[in-house]
Image (cartoon, rainbow, N blue to C red):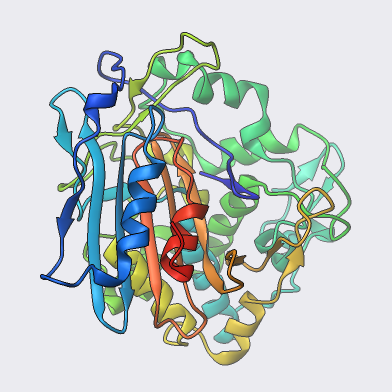
Length: 388
C-alpha cells in the first residue's frame, strides 16, 4: 500500500490458510524464462534476487527490459504448501504503484483543461476534507498528489490498524472499505501540518485523488484508468479489481505475519478485498506491464511535456530522509553508482513491489516479492549498476 523512504509502510495482511514456516530447503532454484543467452547482462540482478530471499520474502519475480529486449526471471518459492517455485510471469498486487496511474489520469485531465493542479480540494469535493483542523479550501490538488497536504494518513488510525494490520484482519479480509469511510476516519484526527509546510506520505491523499477523478469525469477512477492507460497501452495483465479478492493466474501465494511477536506465524494472505487500499494501492499487474507503463509514461506517450514536467517536479521528503524527493505520484531513485531512475514502490498485504525506468524509458525494471521482507534497493543497484 505504501512505500516510505525505502521501507515498507504496510506489511500486515490477511490469511486463509494455515500458517507456513519457511525453511532453508524451501527456497527453490531460480526459475528462468528468457531466450538462450538473454540473461548474460543480468547476472548481478539474478545474484541479488537470490540473496534477497528470506523467511519474510520467500520468492521474487522480475522483468528487466533494455536494448536487448525483455529478461524475465524468478527465484525462490511461490507456494510454501506445495513447494512450487515463484513464477517468472506472475500477476501480483502492486500496492502504491497504483498512485502513478491515478496521478497520470489527473494530469491528463489537467492537460484537457478540466482542472488545475492549484485548484483546491474544496472546489471539487466541498465539505469532504473538513474537521479537526482539516480544511479542503486550503489544500490544492498538487499538494494531495505530492503528499504536502498534511492530511492525516488513514493507515495510522487505530481502528484501521486493528482491523487491517493485526490478527483481527482474519475476520475482516473480505470487508469493503469505501473512500468516504476512509476519509472520515482520517479527518477525525488533526492534520500532520499546515498544507505546503512539510511532507508526509498519506494514503488518504490518493483516496481523495480517486474521488477527484470521479467528480470531474463522472466515472469511477477505475474506469478512467482502464480507458486512458490500460486499454491504449494493451496492459493485459493490469486491472483495477474493485472488490474481487482473487489474483488472476499465473500467480504465486502471498505471505506475511499479522503480529510483531517473535513467535508470530507466517500467514497465506493471497486473497483480500482490494478496497482496503482503493485508489491508494489496490491495483494488480505483472512486471512486463509495469515496465511498459513506466516506459510509455517517461517517453511522453501518456502526458504532454508540460504535465510530465509537473509530475517530475519534486519536493524533499523531509529532514529524516535527506536527499530523497517525491513528485506527483512519481519519485526518483538514485542508485549507488549515481544512475537516477524514476518510478514507485508498492507494499500491500503479502507483496513488496517496485517498478522503475531510466528517464528515456529505455531501461526498466519491475519486481515483486511475495512477502514484505524483500529488500528492493539491491536489485536496483544490481540491474542499473551491475552490482551484486
